[in-house]
Image (cartoon, rainbow, N blue to C red):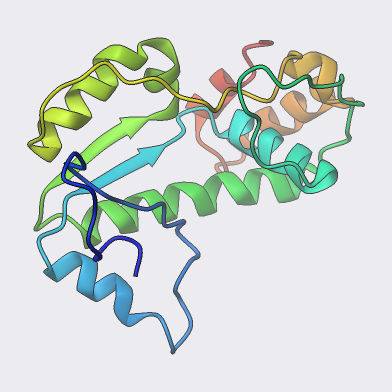
Length: 186
């Protein structure tokens, strides 16, 4: 009713956000097959730094705040303790979802965009997205902004211990070595 409805004449494209876990129950799972087989253009937005993703998720769970509009004030977050097992399991699960999604939508038009590239150069990324959608390229702005203002070392109380635990997981073959790059202290 939102996407497949009448839009203003100036609207060139309409879309929606679908998380990996959305529409998975029996009543809604047909949505995924429909999207794959309908020829809709899929923009697969991922986050390269899975520790940043996990931290943002944990902070949002704690605060109940999932978005922040530009100009809104945010108060400093209190540090949290991250459970290594839960964190690293979430890395595995995120990568599994990403790979499954890439495979699932591989027959149709799919554009891969990372959160980091969008933040680094929004103009270039949004231009590429508009070209992918086949619409007139315009300068776009976002009303949303990043919520987190503090570094990971300020927000993760057990940051050093978490990094050391990951080293053990890497050495034992349970984690990928490139995950150590997520601990960039930013």
